[in-house]
Image (cartoon, rainbow, N blue to C red):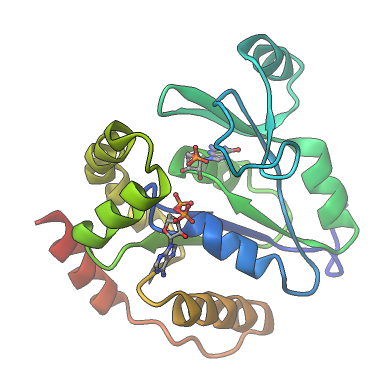
Length: 210
Ligand code: ADP
Ligand code: 5GP
């Protein structure tokens, strides 16, 4: 049975390339924050580390995990499967560790709908502009320009999900975006006052989608 000494769940989602993985890795350096390592059927990128960035598995293994009901959530993203296994997450939360999730809107919806007895805070990360998003995607996926172009198309659809998150944060300067998220988490946990302007966010979304 969850208690007040349990950890909290913090989800970061974003259109691809907005910077959530970078931000999750920064947050994980905080005391008592641990990243939930997902399973995926996608191929590893050159700098990715097996069993640290992801558990890379084939389709059969992923299907086996689905059949055994081992996933807290899973979804198909860009033609590959991604999922979070339940046991490691619940074990960490019960030990008082805060768990960070770098998952898409489908996974965030599934976890939200489970209504687990652990505190959940959800963040949606947005880029400052589409131009900057394309630059970040092109730099990261340098070998394959098609990937950046495909993900830009997906951006138009993904951005619409901002409305279902507790907070939307713009990743312009990395340090200030990180501080903003950290301060909001602290304010949520301690019932403190929150530096958050929903109107500003609404206007920014409009500028990205118009
Ligand atoms: P996501 O996980 O949302 O797909 P990443 O964290 O992989 O995005 O970031 C995409 C690229 O943009 C990476 O190369 C990363 O180093 C870079 N990046 C992230 N945040 C910033 C920032 N604030 N300013 C400049 N580059 C950034
Ligand atoms: P990438 O291939 O760039 O690492 O991730 C692609 C997308 O899949 C990102 O939006 C990322 O947040 C999402 N993702 C990664 N792991 C999971 C997961 O376990 N579940 C879900 N639903 N999405 C995930």
